[in-house]
Image (cartoon, rainbow, N blue to C red; front, side, top):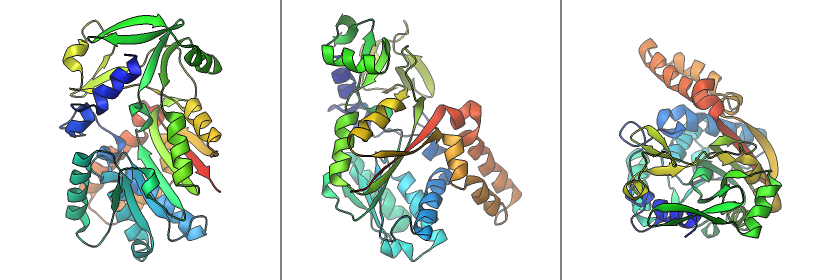
Length: 330
């Protein structure tokens, strides 16, 4: 099979990595911005709140998270929205889109433990099950989990018995590669279908998502395996695909130009593209931290400030991760 099919089985197959619902953070294979600090979700919620307060977004906005894992991000956002305006919780709607029943079960348990019966979060299998007047959609590290093809000098990766071989690439793939002046690296599969699905289900929405990558291709391979907080390039001679298959995370750098193009074809406009650091600061992160300092001890403040450095420091997540904000109106 082509590499995209192999990666899809690795992550989403019957015994796939994401089927196991592994831990994220210290006890897992990798960290995310969500697992680093609740201020990540709080900052995005603050931006949403300011949009509601200014009239940019309606008070009955549906907050939707895609790829929510346990549900930390949407819960952190709901918590901050309640802090800003408790009445919003009764007017807004909340939803998670999650295909896997095992993960849905864990999300329901976590949300119930966090909010009890005070907050209702609908959990659905597809965007098409939602029908909001307006949706504010969030996702963290979703595009790097789409399957991809591997291209090298006109050849495409094919995997048989966990061994990669190179065969002539289909003309359609070469045409897409030429669009991005690409001769080597990953070409994501499924962005276009996903954008069209969102456009059909949520004709009026804003979509804010964070991932690692650039607004161009580097013409080199970034595909890699994460295992117990160590990174292994896929083509490292020490990597044995048969042993790692579905046992560790596999990912690659996102080409945000491809993301923007896919959504533009589906009728979205690009509102913002910037580093995670710039986005979170623009969303109000620094002001939120200063307010937090006035309500807690110096020890607790310093501990949280140190976590926030991870989110915005240029050498950590701040510049490596990007935020893209896409908007659609019918």
